[in-house]
Length: 204
Ligand code: IMP
Ligand code: MG
Image (cartoon, rainbow, N blue to C red):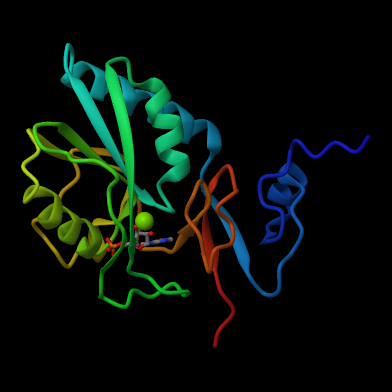
């Protein structure tokens, strides 16, 4: 039987040593460079879960995952949380199909249940311009949670437009580069990469 357990990047072009390690296949002219290895991501997500558990000792937390990018981060994070925890999802549209933000945020899927009186943590894949989280915080604050925090796996501070939007729990601060993997996509691809990789696109 064919084994394919070591795949990290099934389609993209990567540098030779990385290709040997992850056995990737090229996709068009796209190029991937590993920025954060899976092991580092896993370690940091565990630390974040333990920190949340400490901060909310004896209380309940309600995670709100921002679809779709945060789905993988959230599913790992929640398993490191040691207090009572529930979850819900929201979906917003802000990036369209490409790697440039449209600047417009639209609610595509709302919560299933009320958050009134709950300790809410919004779980996001990446805090970039801050437009998405700025919008979500405004929407959620109106629903009277007991507390409202943000957990973002990645933070690109250089790109911030909404300067007042800050994450309470940050996995990694990263430079101003477009990244994919561990839930983050480019045109819906690459979410399945275990590592977080910088994606370079061919010139237009
Ligand atoms: P915002 O610019 O902070 O509103 O970011 C909105 C959304 O854009 C994030 O939740 C991601 O889904 C997406 N995004 C921002 N930067 C990247 C990136 O480098 N790679 C993939 N998606 C990104
Ligand atoms: Mg997102």
